[in-house]
Image (cartoon, rainbow, N blue to C red; front, side, top):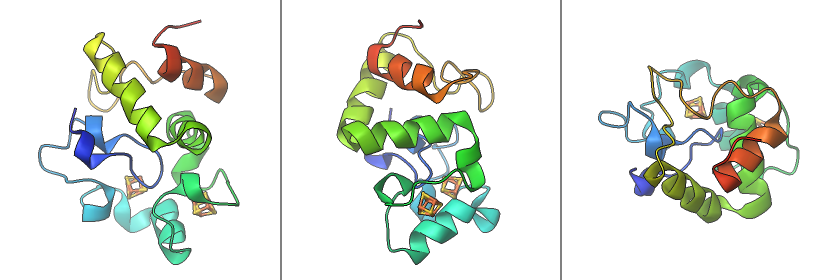
Length: 125
Ligand code: SF4
Ligand code: SF4
C-alpha cells in the first residue's frame, strides 16, 4: 500500500490501485477517466479536495457505483485516516483491492452499508 497516495476525489483508493506504479493519484491527472470525470470537475469547482467533504453528497458520475460511493461515505463518517488504517490492516490480512484487473475483494457488494461494514471489520457478513 502506498498510503501517501491516499484516497481519490471520488473515494477510490489510489493508495491500493494496481495502476499506481505509473499514476500518482487522482490529483496528478493520471487517472484514465479524468477528462470525462464529473466528480473531479465538480469537486474542483467547489474547491473541495474530495467528494466526501461535500455538503451535497450525490450519486453523480462514478458515485453511481457502490465501491467509490461506499468508500466516500466511510471517509465522510469516520475520516480518511481511519479508512486508510482499515485498508492497511485488511491488506495485511490478505484482502486485495485489485485482485484481477481493477476488481478485487471490495467489489461485488450490492449494498453500500455491507461494504462499509466489510472495510471496518475485514469480515463478510
Ligand atoms: S474517477 Fe475521477 S475522481 Fe476518481 S480518481 Fe479518476 S479522475 Fe479522480
Ligand atoms: S456535488 Fe457530488 S460530485 Fe460534486 S463535489 Fe459534491 S459529492 Fe462530489
